[in-house]
Image (cartoon, rainbow, N blue to C red; front, side, top):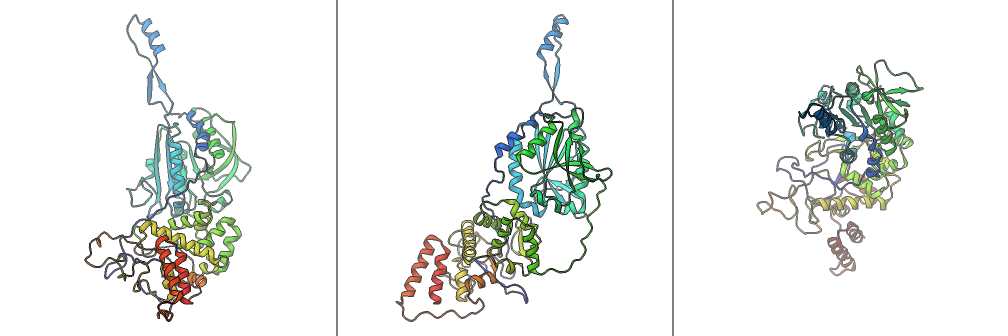
Length: 527
């Protein structure tokens, strides 16, 4: 790979197939990556049952549909002496339209699966005439824009005027952690204030309730009461003992993604529940100002950053941060490590790590579209501080599952993690022979593909930083210097028993793909 810049953290590539690069340029043309995701909602059917009261929701707008009233038509026709005079009556059922809006900020990408499951739940509810899915993006001038794609450049951006319906037929549910740039600039508050004046609006907050005070939406708790009349669902009143809301602010219910909370909201809108419903409310104003810049604080050491995170994080989030210290910080890989090492945790714990202040966004070359490939790195020194509680077996397990993920995505004969062995032997994966094929891989080409060979044009490429990990992780757990270049001398005698044992382990690695076999073989050879 390319030489590290002076003072930069040394990194060791953990795959033998370098990214496809031009002869005089950085890696390009990376393949998109993704992994099968487990369900976020514990019981989608239970959530759908809790939302059934929305089937009784009626808008205050005039009905667009009419059906023939046979009884009234027969009676009027009889009175008219045989002249048929049809009588129509309005149909108010399913006149409402649901807008499901996702805040497309960077921290909300871990909740994409939750958003998709909510869309399926509401789509099968049968309470709305139509379901519109929209994504809210920040613009360069600090305003909010809406599109049909979660990527900012995936579809044209339009004004939030498209979310407004003066007839009051639209119900808007915004899924957001209330911590992105739209909330810091106040654009989200102003958008919700405008929508709340046209029809029912609510914010679905996926973060745990104990983290709500850290967000940019002021939340109070009290009793919510539906307004009078057919259109009273859009005129919520709040009885709260907290501080008075800002002048001109409007209340917006804040809901966790649970059946109890969404069921109470459904009964409140439809008027089928009690007169007052306890809940959380966020106050939004049309004159919301951007958040004040945070005053410069004293610089915290890596140990202080980690200590501050652990003092407020959940135990699962703290353990997840430790496991991620031994893995490449790409969002699909982070989710894979989470499901492997902490199967009982969910997106909330991963969101805690992303919002902890321990990670920073990085723009890695050769990773494709930045909106599609999202890479992170720990703040300087944080990775070393997190690795303290991590055991060697756990670190090797993390690297093993990352290896299996790479093999599943790019093929068993391609980029796996034999660089662990080459790091122990002090060899470079760009110039040394490959354990599996015995060929030399030219930088920028797949193993076994030389210039002019058939298939070179269609050879799969791998993002350069995809399977990388900080060199200090290997130094800590493999206890081998990584910077010498002379290969270890081979034992005397071609029939040495160590060579036979190492060859057996290497064959088992090639047959079963277990990286541990390769590491054991290297340990024997080093001895």
